[in-house]
Length: 253
Image (cartoon, rainbow, N blue to C red):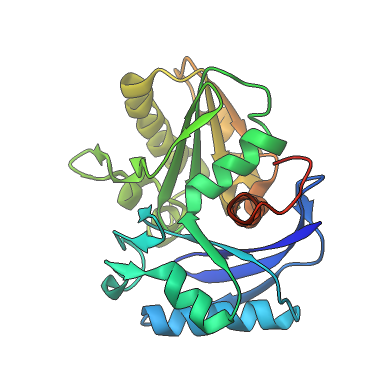
């Protein structure tokens, strides 16, 4: 059975039905721009636009770029601060008229990679990092998720790491691939000192260009690989969460 997933980002909101048997999109994803300002009501309207595009009427999973606890958003680093303390599940369920499950965006991507992608079968400590508007993180040990780690906000050279090493930082600073790779390398080294993972999985949109920067990263003891689901992982993970919350049968969940 297919389940719908929506991935809310700082710059775009994208979604599609997901085939959870195979962990892949069941149709071409539809994307709209994140409204500015990205208030809860404005974003909810764009999420509805994405879901309505497919005529979807079943459960929906939605990712959010921040800490999510029992459906309530607790932080909002890359969206409007009105999200802080918002019952996102209630807001979106009211707007969509269907059951909604909300979770952290990187946690969703990590769940997809651990189940279907580069982390499948790995039982040690695995860290999925998504590089985009910010840096998201999902930490797994023994295949189990430690939710809402938000390692993009670790301090790096006196700054929030994501302000130095995210994809947006590369674009805004007009950084070459080698220069940006050095920043990513310093960030990975910092995370490795704290967690000693056996595997880093690098996701987000930049994972499509992994050949341009991953070979330049040196001195990391952990294995460093690109995400197999690339930038669809958030959508797949969102659908997985909706499936698990509603006990929708799916062989891979």
